[in-house]
Length: 111
Image (cartoon, rainbow, N blue to C red; front, side, top):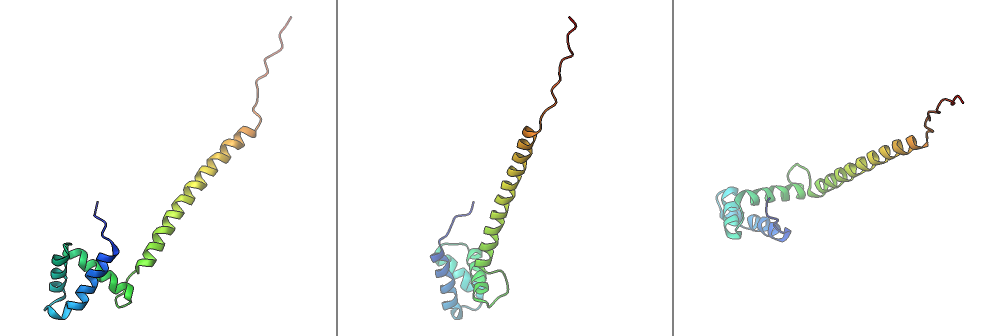
């Protein structure tokens, strides 16, 4: 499981890349230098920078807030489906309890 890195670290890495981009020949070089300096992987910094650009509106994609909302709604939808299934099964069970059962009446005894 990946380590959770706090949002302050992510924001700092993005800010450092943006501030020092002109000092490096390429974006990759800037990302690599900041990643090495902060002790995280280059790919992580690259993805954080890309997501920050999406959130800023300078790059097309799904914003962080939208992604979180979709995730929350999917979880809520899953819980509601499970609740509905439980209620459906319970109603079938209790409806079966309300239906009078045919009882076999023993034949009369000949005395």
